[in-house]
Length: 538
Image 1 (spheres, rainbow, N blue to C red):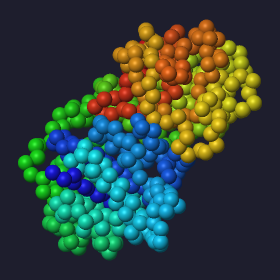
Image 2 (tube, helix red, strand yellow; image 1 turned 90 degrees about the vertical axis):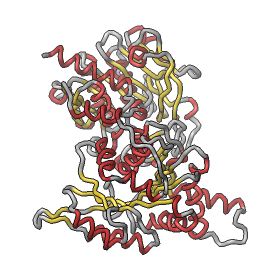
Image 3 (cartoon, rainbow, N blue to C red; image 1 turned 135 degrees about the vertical axis):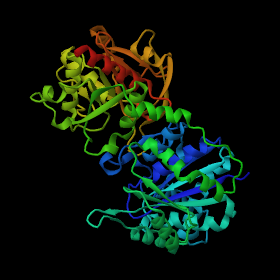
Image 4 (cartoon, one colour; image 1 turned 180 degrees about the vertical axis):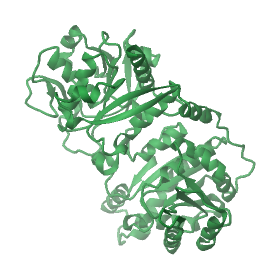
C-alpha cells in the first residue's frame, strides 16, 4: 500500500487550532492501528524558531535529535506518544536555504531559479520525504499560517501540484475555518468560511473536508449551506466546537466522523475501530480530580501562555496522574522583589522557576528560589531555573555575594554558572546550543533516582551555560548535591538539597517528553510533593 498524505490548511484567522485538529486526527488513526506521523510547514523565513523571542512565536520545542521546532510538534508528540525529528518541521527559510545552496553548487546551471518549479519542487520533496521512508501508512502535513498569506502561497501551490501528481486515493485535504457567532445578532455567520474556501479554490486546491471552528453548535441547515457554497460533499462539513480540554478534541472529532471521512477519501477499507481506553481513562482522571494544589510558575514570559506551553501541559498530565487539579499561578519574575515575594508566594503549595535567557527578571527568580528553600516549599527549577537555584545557594549559603552566571555578568568573581567549553568558540547564534537528548546518570539513593526509578535516563536539552564544576566540592559540602551527571562529560544535570522535603533543579527540559499516557516523572513527583505539603499545612 502506498503511503497516504493528508494536508491541513487554515483560513480566516490564525490560532484556530490546526495543530490540535491534525494531532487529533492522527490520534484517531493511530488508535486504529495505523502508523501515523505529522509534520509542520511554517511560512516564516527563519531557518527555525530557535532565535525567536518567546513573545514572537511561543516556546521553542526541541526534539530528541536536536531540532528547534514549532510548538505544534509538542502537540503532535503529546497526542501520539511518539518522537518527531528534524524532518517533521520545515520552514520557508530551510526551503530557500537548500535551493540557494544548490544554485551556488551549480545544480541549476543555465536555468533561471524560480518559485515554480524550483521552490515548489523542494517543498514537495520534503512533503513526501517521511512517506518515502516506508515507516508510515499516513503522513499528515499542517500548513502554517492562513490561506491568502503571501508567505504561504508556495506551500499551497505545492499541494495543488501534488493533487495532480499523486493518485487521487493517496491524498486528501482538510481546511479549518472560523464560523463566528455575532452575539448582537444571535447568529452564526458562514461568510468568512465561504471566502476562505473560495480563496483556497482560486489557488487550485479543493478541500475534501471543512472543519468549522465555532463557539456554538452548527445546525444541519448551516452545514448544508457551507457544503453547497464550498463545493464539498454533503456531510463533509463538521464542527470543532470549543472543548473543556484540548485532549477532549480527538473524541469530539471521532463523534463528528473525521477519521472515517479521511479513510473513505483515501480508499482505506476494513481498518479496525479506534481503541481509546487509555485516553478516556486519562480524561476521566483529569475531569474528576480528588484534590487540588496551587503552583507558582515564576518566569519572565508569563504574559504569553504559549511561552511555557509544554510546562503547562506537563502539569495537566501530572495532575491527572495524581488525581489532582493543578492551579497554575503565573508570576512575572521581573516584578518580584524583597518587599512582595512573601505576598506573591505565601499561599503556594509548590514553586517552579521556569527556563529562559537573559538578565531581565533574574533577581526575582533568585528570590523565589530562596523563599522555597527557606520555607520548605516544594521547589522545581528547569534549565535557567536550576541555574538560579545554584546562584541563590552560592550567595546565601556559601557567602559569594557576587555569584551569578557569566551569561548575566561575564566579570563576576564567582561564576558558579559558566559558558560550556564547546560554546566558547561559537559566534553563530542559530542552532548552536547544546540541543537534543543526552544521557544522565543518577546517584543511587537520590531524589532523582527515586522519581525516575532508574539510574540512567535520557532528557532533552537547550542551553549554552552549565554548572561550574570548580564549585562542586564546596557546594556539596554545604548541602547542595549534584545527583545527576552526564556520564561522558561530567556535566551536572541535576542538583538537590537532601535536607529539604522536595528541592530539585534540572539542567534539561523534562517538560518536552511528557504525554497524557506517560506523564513526566519529575512533574508527577513535584505535584505529589505539593499535595503532601498542602496536607501538612491543613
